[in-house]
Amino acid sequence: MTHITRNTFITYFGTSRVSYLEQIAEQADEMTLPVFLIGGSVRDLLLSRPHTDFDIAVEGDAPQFANHLAQTYGGQVHIHDHFQTATWINNKKIIDIASCRKEYYDHPGALPRVTRSSLTEDLARRDFSINALAVCLNCARFGELIDLYHGHNDLQTKTIRVLHPKSFQDDPTRIFRAVRFALRIDFQLDPATVSYAKNVGDALHMISADRLYTELERLTEERGLYNGSRMLDALHVWHTLFGKKPTSDAWNHVYKLNEAGKLQPFELLLALSCGAPLEKYERTKIEKRRQREWRTVSWDKVNKTTTQGELHQLLAFISDESIIFAAYALSHQDQTRLLTYVQQRKEVTCTPLLSGKDLQTLGHTPSPHFSHWLFALTCAQLNGEVTTKKEATTWLSDYIANQ
Image (cartoon, rainbow, N blue to C red; front, top):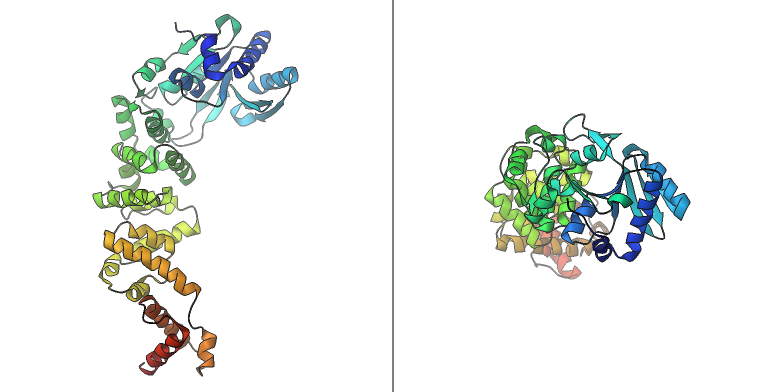
């Protein structure tokens, strides 16, 4: 049986933080509560990776235990009844304490229902073997490693492995977490875990838009959304969500967006969906508008334009974000043109050479023609045909005369 010595704790956590563990152990012994360091804290301890928080589990009432600690040593307690957890804050140290618990899923992708349980059942609900580790803190067993799923061996072999075949069915977001861990600590998914992920099926469709975006945003905090999305593709996630496998053009688009620093979760979904409807994943009116713009603009016609004015006739009412997104799906030359157009359009529309009031001053009666004339003038500005108010007045007079 593996033991972690007090010196190892001190080397990893420091003397001050270990004293908190010893206080917790002392009070748990007094209350005859089995208490454990658990989950990510143990994983990172064994990997010697930085981990700022303590994750503590007790076989008993965590909120009651946290309140007892605060009464004994001071500090504040925040209780989260639904998950039977509490946070003890003392001298700016934040310690999360949870009751050992069991989880039930009403359907795939649902948030779990929680009931209090034993450590054995608590470890059984974990996502991966490397997170199903615990270290006993009670004085008589201090430092004893509890490893029911061979997680220590998986840490040594750099393996990510689920605990049972239905793990991804219970919570399909675990697929995203598996990829995130693989990127973070340079581990590989074991073959069985890969197979379970590939065959998760309709459970992926049960993930809400908010949960999907949360997982994708967390991927951006690791080694990048692009690398993570590629791993998810190998696990058939995009094919399952969109009913089709992303094309090589789609991946080239995503790659160029990533290289330009423009890749965000919605852009990723829009590029990889390859025309599949994204209504489920539109969280805002802006995202709904951008999907509509991406689907309706004829980008083939954009490629055939020869001047910035012609571009403006096609894209005048398309948002900057949608144009920039589309630019990275095109050739380098067309990409440069579109990005230049966005910048020039901002400059021209912010400082127009003539306005409707100027047209009235020139003797024209207000009419629907005003917007048409001024739009034509904007195209001329974008083409570099006019640069001053005097030139604009002359150009527009000739244009109106020739109508």
